[in-house]
Length: 567
Ligand code: SAH
Image (spheres, protein in one colour):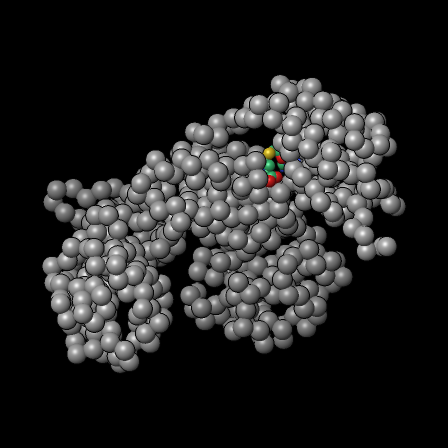
C-alpha cells in the first residue's frame, strides 16, 4: 500500500512523523488532486469538512478510488472517510489509530456490526446486488443462502443466513448463491464465487496467448463455470514462464502453480498421451497439473481439450486450502510490529492467541474474524486448535508476542502439524518473524547486545534446571552478554538469583544489568543496576533482564557493550 500523509499545522506534522509513510506538509488540496491516481490511501490531518470538499469532485468508483482517512488536530480521532472496504480506509483508520494511540471512527455498517462485507470474503469474488443484500442483512430481514459449493463462510455471516427449504429459494427475496458456476444476475441476488477451480494448462513453446485464452474461455463457458472462481493456473514446471500462460495469469490476477514431470506422471488421468510423454516426460500436463494442484479429493470437471498449440483441463478442489501463520507481533503495539505480521493477522478469518497479545494486535484483527482468547498455559491446546482450523480450510493467525520462534509457538506448531497429513508444512504454514523481547529491551537500555550474546530462558517448566544451569555456566565462562527470558514469576521465585550467582562468578559485581519490563508497551519501565545490586522485586513475568559482559559499561546513563570501533 502506498500511503501519503498530508498536514497543514505543526502539530499535524508532528503526528505524521509517527507514521511510516511519505509525508507532505502544506498545499493540501493541490497535493490530493495531483496524487489522487498515484496513491492507495491518504491520511489527511485536517477537518473532515476540508477533506470532503477537496475529495468530493475527485471520487470515481469505490473499486478504484484511494482510501481517505482524516485525523483531527488533537490526534484523538481517525475517521475513515471513504473507500471503507474496497479502498481499505477502515483498515487504514484502525492502523493509524493504533500507531497514534487514537480512536478509529468507522461508519460502514458491516464493520460496526461485526458482519463481514460480502465483497471482502477471503479469496471469493462477490457479484450482483451487494448493496441490496447487505442492507437486508443489516436490517435483520430474512436472507436465504444456497451454498451449492459447500464453501466455508465466515461464521458471523453463516449465523445470519437462513438456508433454502425443499421448495428451493424464493428468488424474489434477498439471497446469496455460493457457487463456481455462472449464474444469471437477478435483483436482490448476490453470487459469491469461491476460489475452487484449478485450470490446468499446457502450451507449446511460443503458443499465441490468444489461442490459449480462447481455449480456456471455451472450456469454462461450455461447462457453465465462472472464471471468477479460478484460484490458480496449474502447469508443468518447465512451462511456467511460457508467455501465453503468464498472460493468462496476469489477465485473471491468479498465481501459476507448477509441478515437475515426475509428479505429474504419477497422477491417474482419463486422457494420457504417449506423444506428450515422449515430449515432456509425463503423459499428461493439463489434467495431471489441475488434479495435483487441486489436492486430495479434487475432481476433474473438464477433461483435456486441445487446440493446435495448447491444452486445458479444469479441476475443482473440495475445500479451500487452509493456511496457518504463526505471527510474532513484536514486544508491544503496532509501531514495533512488522507490516508482514499486521497483514497476516488482518487477512486471517480465525485469530487465536493469549488474550493480552490479541489486545496489542486489536487494530489488525478484521471485524469479521472469529477470535479465540486463549488462557495462559494453554499453549498446546491453542496450537492444536489453530492447526485444526487451518486443516479445515480456514486462514488462521496464531498470535505470539515478540518473535514467533523465540521461546514461542512456531516449533510446537511445526511438530504438531505432522498430525494433520492434509496440511502441507511448507506451502500452508508460515512463520512471520517479530522483534523479540531482547532486542526491544536492548534498544530501551542503549546498545548492550552490540557484541556476542546469548538468550537463555529461566523457565524450568519445560527445561530441567540442571540444563539451564549448564548453559548459564557456559555463557558465564565465555563472557557473553546474556538476555534472560522468563526470569521470575510467582511460581518460580528463586531461579533469577541462582542465575545471577552463576554469571556473577565470572564477571565483576559492578557489571551493569538492565531490566526492562513491558518494553514497547504503554507501561514500559527500565532500570539499570549491577549484578551485585539487582533487586528481584524489580523483575516480573514481563521483564527481560540483560546482564552485561565484563566489557559492558554505562555511558551517559545508557548501557553499552563496546564493539571495538573505538580502538
Ligand atoms: N516470543 C517472545 C518471548 C516469549 S517468552 C519474544 O520473542 O519476545 C516470555 C518472556 O519474554 C517474558 O517472561 C519476558 O522475559 C520476555 N518478554 C516478552 N515480552 C516482553 C516485553 N514487552 N518486555 C520485556 N520482556 C518481554
